[in-house]
Length: 159
Image (cartoon, rainbow, N blue to C red; front, side):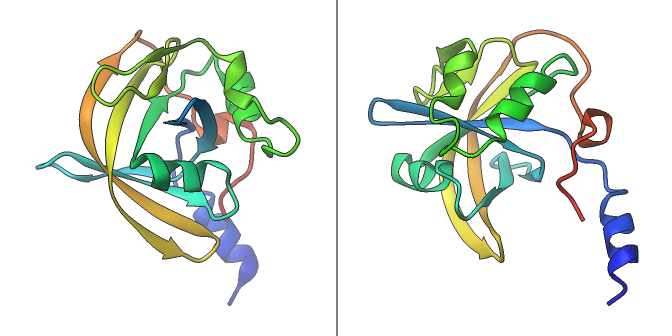
């Protein structure tokens, strides 16, 4: 395979930067995700790729739920913090104001552009990641603004 071409083409894909949040027991947690997409209209479903070694993955499986928060262009610092290893930064979500989602009781970011509370439908292994499929149970808009993208952040995650 032409590795240089693969990296170039995959980095041409437009990716957003999202915060995936979860509550399991008395612990809230958040991670940054770039590979998020709508997966179905009816019922409304979304899919997100989560790294296999992420602290958030077993929490999502155990809680059977997760939230996807759309970050604004002014939230690069939060996206960067949530992207750090949980071993280095155990309380990653503690830096961001959250509120409890109305449908599933998940932490949602009070300063995100918007959020989706999702019931876990299925997971599927996908190499270094696990695809997490969720049915959207509730949605909220917190404010208007432009969504943060991977390209404008200067971060590199694809390719």
